[in-house]
Image 1 (cartoon, one colour):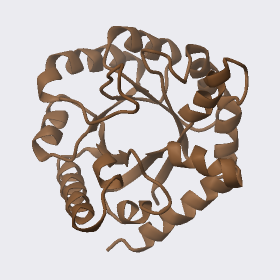
Image 2 (tube, rainbow, N blue to C red; image 1 turned 60 degrees about the vertical axis):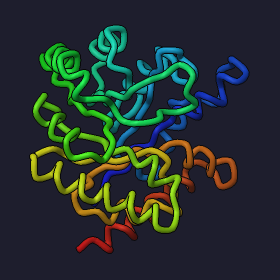
Image 3 (cartoon, rainbow, N blue to C red; image 1 turned 120 degrees about the vertical axis):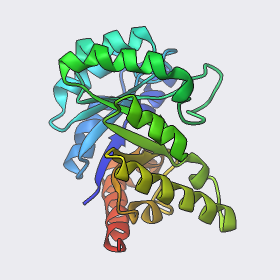
Image 4 (cartoon, rainbow, N blue to C red; image 1 turned 180 degrees about the vertical axis):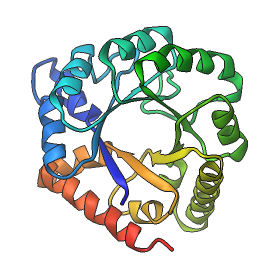
Amino acid sequence: MIRLYVNVDHVATIREARKTFEPDPLQAALMAESAGAHGITVHLREDRRHIQDHDVDRIRKGISTPMNLEMAPVDEMVEIAIRNRPTQISLVPEKRQEITTEGGLDVGGMKNSLIAIKRKIEPFKIKFSLFVDPVEDIITCARDLGADSIEINTGRYSESDGEELQTQLLAIKTASRHASQLGLKVFAGHGLKVSNVELISAIPEIEELNIGHSLVANSVYVGLKQAVMDMREAIDRGVQKRT
């Protein structure tokens, strides 16, 4: 089995377009759970463009599955994580001008600060994950600084087709195998949708996928519960192809 964590950020994006109270990310999270999601992911960005601080608190308290808090590796976010006690934090790079996360962490260049963050959250039994590009040296560095898991950036794969798609897929497969051999749990996400998730979910080492934008987009047409169910079916088809 491969776990599906549903990211509800873009439910909040719609709400923030009008600065109102709906749609509610917590209600979306509960609906995702009822459709078979194994966990909920939220990204509290420094500029608060979608998820707000109160969403983190309400979702963590309101859901029955684990919560994965995506955040920049900065002191403000570490303190918020310690207050809210998510099951896991996933550290991601942030740029104010970017539309969405553009790449993985520079783990080697941030090694000391990442180790410091891990030490701060350890007493609270919060799991520690790093969002990384599918590069073996970066993954080795993630292991060396004590990450519990990595989330492999599938962004380039999701934007590719033809030969380039196969090149990106091979990189993800190789990186997943390497991470598993190092004892890391292997997750993946970014840009995944029903039409491209099967090849990723067929990779044996991948245990968990974080998917958000395509689910919220599809929910406009079919509703969120059906969108999550359709994604689960596509993931399961990929798992059945594992060798």
